[in-house]
Length: 542
Ligand SMILES: NC(=O)c1ccc[n+]([C@@H]2O[C@H](COP(=O)([O-])OP(=O)(O)OC[C@H]3O[C@@H](n4cnc5c(N)ncnc54)[C@H](O)[C@@H]3O)[C@@H](O)[C@H]2O)c1
Ligand SMILES: N[C@@H](CCC=O)C(=O)O
Image (tube, rainbow, N blue to C red; front, top):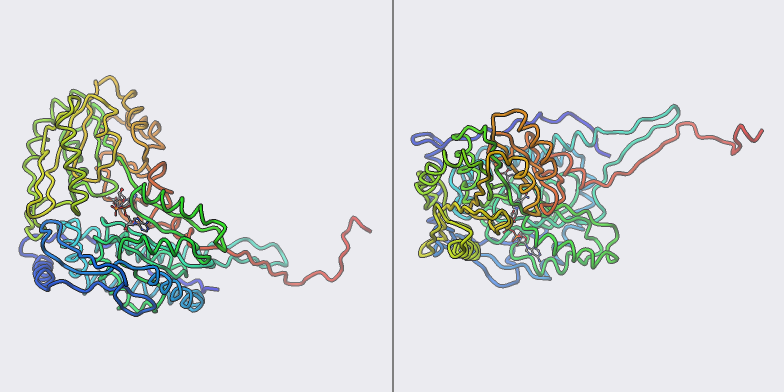
């Protein structure tokens, strides 16, 4: 049983500005130059503490803005790698579960401090080069959010351990927060370095051992994340890193008797495929697996006629085009009253078309290329369909260029068909659909916002009319798990806006909160009778 001590009170890591001439600017520029010039790094698997090449086919991690530039090489993990990782996780499990909570927690707190200090530039640079993030977007993800996950999760876990049952006279009741009875399989997406780190470390903090399968396109930053955990003293076998597409790993892990939990973030289609596979193998498992998945979105901005035009335009540009719309939280549909559209459309179009897009090493850029050729082709095809259809009008952007990098211009598409694919389909790129409604139709348009897409992740309502904001909060209660008033729908902060959505957007277990950590514990109730009875009769029997 873990001792219950006080842990350091977490505070959100301050976001650095990287202004010209600042010391942090000099540091990151030096790191970017060194990492880009270093030549391809060997991105190994780590199984039971041993670094080794996965046995499968090789793949490359390249720069999205310069796809000929290879940053690292790795191998897809094979079934044999997965078997070895499960054996390593199983061997490490008893010692890790028996370790005092404070000792486990200290490893993750140390990782947070290493990342906040000497490793910050490394992980930011890997995220900028490998995933195509500007310095601002890398800083809020790879540095601040991951540091916050590591620190806040320790405090949340401590809160859970402290939650103990009452005891009636003569009895002492306790809750033993056991880890799950087997390993956890963590599968993470390309777009957030912090999410990869959190998916692997949250179950580990609760005493579980883990197989971590990052996205191939995020492997460079995942490699450095793992190095930070090693530097912080993570014992061998607790988290086993398996690069690659995950198909062979899933074939082994999802039919293994010791499979006890899936910690997933990525697309709705992949999550549903993995869940179905788990269902097919249910009788193979020793216990019912915990399934936690945060998935896709079709996130909205709804403007009320009372909205401040500058607030609306800024939310639309930042919410839709930061990191080229490759955030599950990014706004990709906006509902704007005609009076406001008449006011903002010219500025919105002009400012969108003026957004500087290019290499992340040029700090004047607002955003960069999309992640890979597959994403590029998806966005190019969507823009071509929009240009060809009579019900849609591409009013900003709309052009693409893959000659050097996977560049898609931030694009605004207007349609008078509220069920057009631009309002229903997640593209996960810099494409914003706009539906212009008549000023008196706020109530009707809320029904459209609620029902057009199957998701329920994030949404924002912009307006100055308090009654309208209150009505939208009520009417759209189930339309978004993260609901913003007078702000863009992106940029949730750990401990402030616990993140996640329901409907087709996932299980809403709120990353970076105690709700998520609870899923990685299997509580045992212990009753101890202090002076036990010595006769079997009851009063009514006399
Ligand atoms: N709700 C959230 O918190 C959240 C956060 C980030 C991203 N997302 C969503 O993620 C998606 C973008 O990320 P992506 O393109 O990396 O998603 P994706 O579904 O293509 O991939 C996610 C992960 O699943 C892996 N994968 C795919 N098939 C697999 C299999 N059979 N076995 C094991 N692993 C497998 C991928 O390699 C990757 O690691 C978008 O839909 C976005 O909305 C959601
Ligand atoms: N938590 C992030 C989104 C993560 C998904 O990609 C945000 O709030 O913008």
